[in-house]
Image (cartoon, rainbow, N blue to C red; front, side, top):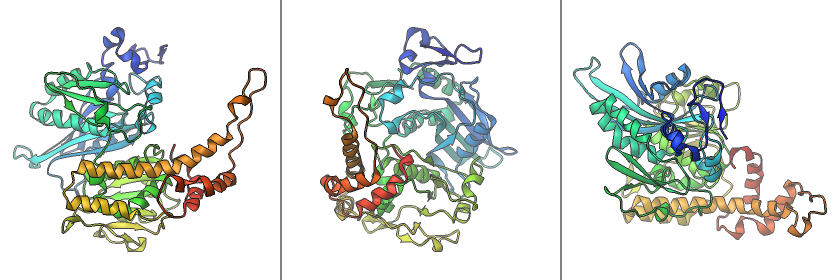
Length: 491
């Protein structure tokens, strides 16, 4: 079924991805392109205007003025970061336009078939940035400063940053004709169908990916799922569309991974203060992914600046901080966000011998000066104990020079098992509320589902709690009681 929106442009129809590959829709301008991306933006530095939107492609896409301004500010590292050369990072911003800001809107098929953490956003955009700053004597400021930005509703951080690594250097040399050619190639891509091996040609390279589907076993290796086709040239196989190097992101805070997992599950307000937008955005995205297979449902901003539309809303002292994770680089935030309960202050990674130096947990009262040392500033007391066995394995892996991919797999497996141990007692109790199959007959009224009773569930934890599937020690009951107040933060 097709629905027409209120505008006259026939391109702005509501379709599912199954239609994008049809012969009819493939002739519509930008149908396949818009199945993956909203647009591609070029942001440059203007001496009079500051950051300015130089180009939006396709040209007839309409971003609101607020969205354009936000993209401009979020596409440049702030002056404190001192980023020279090429820098990649991500941001996420709230959509300010109406419902019909893009040509095509999914019919929900994609979101029903993927794990919840990979669902397409409906109210936010992701921005994937490739920023270049190099000395250039032909420019008045003495520096060439420009960002190429992919704007999408998909959380495919790995795919889109890999794509930028291919196209951005070429674009900075050849400018708009190169960008137009790339967009036309993307407009030939197959639809983003979960569970299928997708070959995505661009600039003489074929990127081969597979978007996970709901039926996949959590934690299974995505590489085994990819088809080994005899393609020439040989494809660039991307093992995952979204998984970051979790171990690298968490290196300075490895011994506190238990605390971070609890804070995410409880939806606590957290600020990540980092020396660069790369570290800021990767750390925030790693935090949101550490409760997989659950989806982190609070707001999060991998990179946030003082120019953001929500700056006043998030820095007010007249009300409690909202349930959000902010990634920032400007030291000014140390002063404006002092009232926030959890602040992770990161520096450049330092080694202590063969091992990465671990930040310490410190009192919030010590967070006063702009040169505040790295640390986790919080008064939070964990409900569960640290898993010393995991920490020893990871630290021993560093000494033995174990590949980062293997370290990340160990860490991801631990977090997955921890989250599953948290979920299973809930699933078991909910199953007990369902009527028995033999009670369902066509000759009687449907039996009622028993109501969820908190105390009954908490009582069930004594004999059917996480202790059956996890070796993690601690006060699980109190943790469940706290998590029960925060059920809106995950699903």
